[in-house]
Image (cartoon, rainbow, N blue to C red; front, side, top):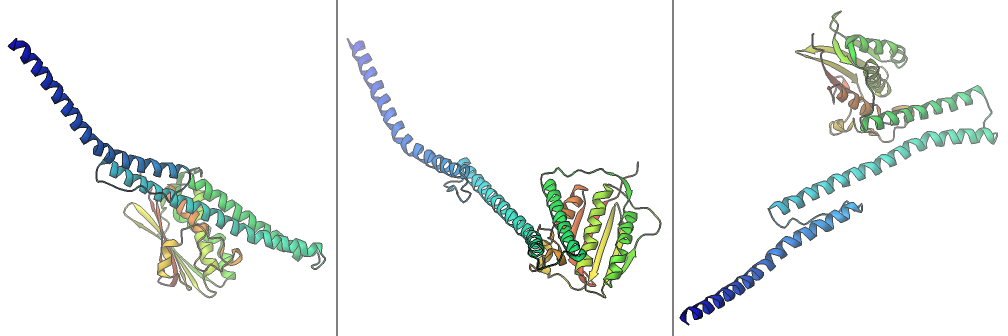
Amino acid sequence: MAEARFEQTYARSLVIVALGMLLLSAALSVPLAHRLIRPMQNIAVATRRLGQGDYEARAAVMSNDELGRLAQDINELAVALDAAEHSRRQWIADISHELRTPVAVLRGELEALQDGIRPLTSDAVHSIHAEVLNLGRLIDELYELSLSDVGALTYRKQSLDLAALLEDSLNRLSGDFQAGGITVRFSGIGKVPVLVRGDPDRLTQVFRNLLLNSLRYTDPGGRLEVKVGVESDQVRIDVMDSAPGVPEDKLDHLFERFFRVDPSRNRASGGAGLGLAISQRIIAAHNGHIEALASPLGGLWIRVTLNLEKEG
């Protein structure tokens, strides 16, 4: 009998203890579950809003644990997506603005010819042809920039003499600089070839962009100095022109697409602001560096640095 009573008492005690443990677990799990579920719900809502295109959505950071770090990562992703969306909209707006100008000029010229306001002369045809060329150049630049952005711009790299390539670009534009009253001085390193591995067409495009930039903006009677220097395993190309200069706070923005120091400049006088952006991408594809500085001559100084070709 005593043994039976002991078993009954023991079993009853086990039930009571089990119920107590169950109640204690439930009491502890409710706030714990609430603490876990709230951040997860908050993160789920934020990610759902991001998926719907609301890039201003942010997840509240409620802790310093893994969930808190996840919320911080989602917020950083939201900031990046918001910036990318803003860049995309600005890109579309800039393209629309740049295309509108030459198209409007062409339309005005053609309508003037249709209405008989302007006679159909060789000058009129030449003016329309010039605007078509401007429009074509802009479209080509936009196409190249878009290819570069997605990494699809092709390069056919080979061993080449960078100094000779630069000097050839200068010679091709010498007549334009003379017509603009700009004195050009080229300083190489003698007849020693400066060998790099690169795409001659793309690098010529960079040099032409830099030289045309100086030709457009340098005041008549000004100067342009182009220097080639070799230091260790690198070659430097310095293109320095005279006034007008660029404000120091705008130097870092020169390689942004569609950026102009003077927003009022149009394509006839200053281009669309794509040349330096394309040049930066081409130099980066050659594992080089390009930067803008204040020129000691009073204008703009563009420095291009590339790696020399390794022997053997």
